[in-house]
Length: 104
Image 1 (cartoon, rainbow, N blue to C red):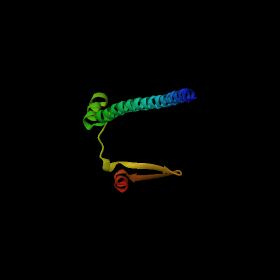
Image 2: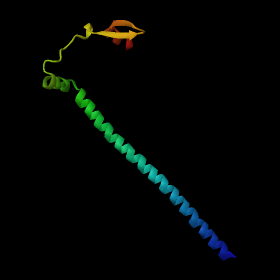
Image 3: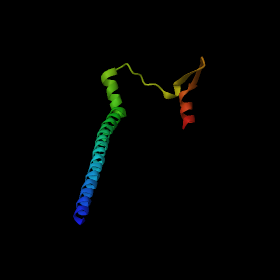
């Protein structure tokens, strides 16, 4: 009788161990996938930040203007710029700088 109980308990322990190993393996697989996705997104974020910082610097923009646009671009005074808004077929023209100050 004791031998049967011992064999059954060993079998139950083996079964429980197997179930726990399978569940932890599934969790590890999910964790690996999430970590890989995070790694790829971090790499992409680094590339996008580098591109943004590189392309949006004033020196680079001036260099691109001189290289590609030469005389096509003209510097304008921001105070003279206007904002045009169309609202229900009404055209509203406002100063751009006044809107910027009000938004801050």
